[in-house]
Image (cartoon, rainbow, N blue to C red):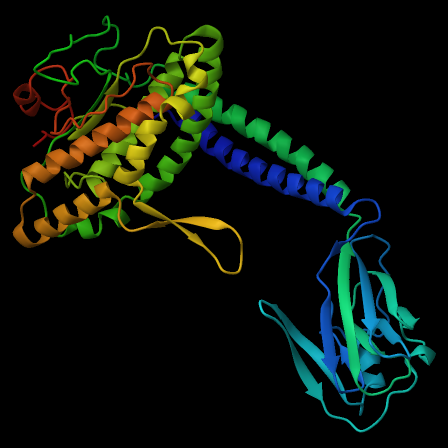
Length: 486
């Protein structure tokens, strides 16, 4: 692969992911800012608190600090609203003060500190602090930074400042036995500017990243690997043969089984292909972005850009080689090459380049027309699904469980290989047929062809549409500089 386009693809992918993250965060901040409104707060549910001590305190708010005089902060990072309703006829007092002042005020006073609130079921955990003294009248103290006192419901608002703070709730007269219901709310004045900044930077980063990804894809595909050995020949290159169903389909997947496979190498192949998986992550980002670009090109011109087509076929080919080696078939012990081009590797994929594609079909084939195949592929590659309803929530949730059919067959083949040293040919042919179905559907959904994938399991190592007979292919020499294919 050319180093320049590859570097552009890598940098573009990183910038694209960063841009997506920034745009997502900015969108969330914008929604949150709109939800809280100009005077609104994000409010919690009303929680009842009850203790037979003199006071109720919250855990420390903010970092623990010994500073006696916190530095004021004019920036409106957050504003807190607390509303307390007391069952006591004398009313309720609620205040916020530095932690050190609260500790001095309640020294020797029996009080309870809230240690946690569990919502399902609703339960409050307290830490009781023993003491004998009755607190002084809370309203007469001058260390409160915000307070409210009176009968019924009392509300206070406070702009968050640096320091260590504590919320204290007492009866208005400082008497024993605090029984209140408290609701908390928070709002931030930074959400609007944060949303604007995140969206602006995110969109700019995303655009730059996408441009670099597209340039990298075009650079890797231009003059790059031919997507098919039939490139430049009239389609169909091989006429439909009633004795060879599938010979006319323009996407061909092949995989030749090594006659001598290691019994246990498959146990570590998933580790050995980690470098490939890292590269494929970046390649698949380029595949996804370039497929969208190709979709617009097809919609307006009826043609799939040749450089993008070459690249996307190369990514599918690379992905199939890694799968054939490590997890989708385990058909060879030869390590896959790091290239988009066709090689003498035992696994290969070819797709005929379409000279013309339907303008309108591109709008529906990747999500609507492919649905019947997706249901089948969900069984082949996606495992089994179950729907469960949680007692705590009204929602029904779909969960994936068990092996996929393809994964189960590969595991069975691996276990047989481990104990017998042989890969059952019938099992291998079935596994290749399932993979062939999967990649045909991917080719169609990726807009590469208009021909609908057949509902047919073409088993065997050689695709029915591959040029030449299976015997010819098995005897075909490797390209120059490549090892012979077993």
